[in-house]
Image (tube, rainbow, N blue to C red; front, side, top):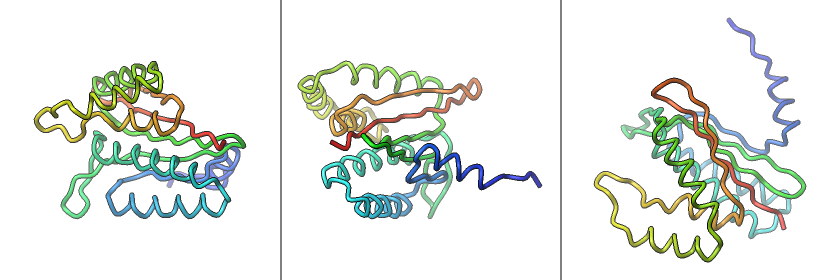
Length: 183
């Protein structure tokens, strides 16, 4: 049996100020439980209610992206769910929410491009882009309307970072992260 040093992992998380982490299958029930845990954790730290709402919204939005779009799938209660990793780091000035999951290289490229486009828009342009996306008809079989990433950037007031690591020719690990300022 391979030895895994849990203490080193714990120290790594402590050194990087990870206040919440999850890896695995993301079902609706798990999403609700983690969301409740997050709200409780932030409330005990005397965090501004507006900041708590932003962090919670972004965390849920990024978790739903994993739930819906991850290429790694599992069945929970006869429903396919996505698998990935979510965690939140805290610093004196902000929270950073991270979400990572496997997607196809084409999807990864598309999402990185979407993030770059969204990040290049002013707040007014973001609002207009959101309204335009809302009016667009969905393609057949499409789950979302492309509003999630726009909503994340609007809510955070900061850009969304998208980075990728190629696993093999069919799979890419996509990480989305965004900061929420405490002030």
